[in-house]
Image 1 (cartoon, rainbow, N blue to C red):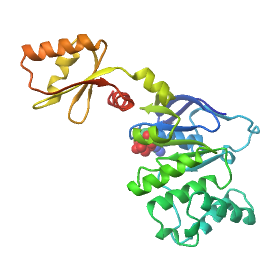
Image 2: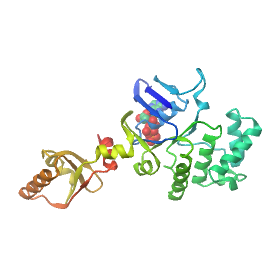
Image 3: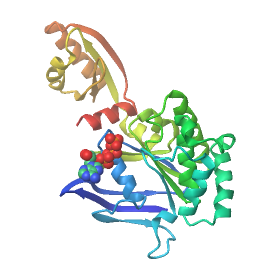
Length: 300
Ligand SMILES: Nc1ncnc2c1ncn2[C@@H]1O[C@H](COP(=O)(O)OP(=O)(O)OP(=O)(O)O)[C@@H](O)[C@H]1O
């Protein structure tokens, strides 16, 4: 078990991570989800021992007092730096030795992890020749070379093309059977696809957390998607004024009204639309998704 208590990071007096607490159990795959600038990288860098927290505590169950947390954690940064002139295997042996493995052990581990992440055949190729997906897979092997109990991956798929994304997501799906994974992303569908639970971060705080099922149950409510001819935004005040509408979220080409009582809200909106002759082009009743929860959080 990995326990994080009231972690805070301030830069020049401004807190960018605020009082973050959570626990991770072995064998879980957890997504740290948040928009750009939410504080995900700063959190992961503190958890992986690269950045000193301003305050708070990070504990690994069973860790020797005074031990370096980096023995237990592997980390793949958002923008990993590879030596393009090295081969994949040379790179892993080099990283393994930096992590205090003997040369012989580092070579053995390098072969094991090159195979594990699916790039053994390319082990003698220079990294400069690797595709984006292969580089990320090498990055994951690098994070695992010292056999940590947990790996942390910062936006592992966001810079990849669709093929690379698929390769890395499939690999993470396989690895999560054996390793605890915490990864950050700003893309909800990636989080939904491979994580067991979510930590939703907004402006430095964890604003929601739980398993996908729990969060879906908790936040599922009725909604009405509405679009107008012209500017949707002009109608937000009218919709917000309707008592059965609890929230209005701006989506791509429509407004999503989260409603308390679906039947009452439907009648009120349609009555007002009729009286005021609103130029409705869409009126659709359904249930909210996690995506809307995410949108609601990041728009606030
Ligand atoms: N070294 C630093 N000095 C000052 N401000 C920083 C520093 N590192 C990060 N920040 C600020 O902290 C906030 C959170 O940044 P962080 O990189 O942790 O967010 P993020 O959620 O990972 O976003 P992204 O997905 O864009 O990387 C941002 O406003 C950023 O500008």
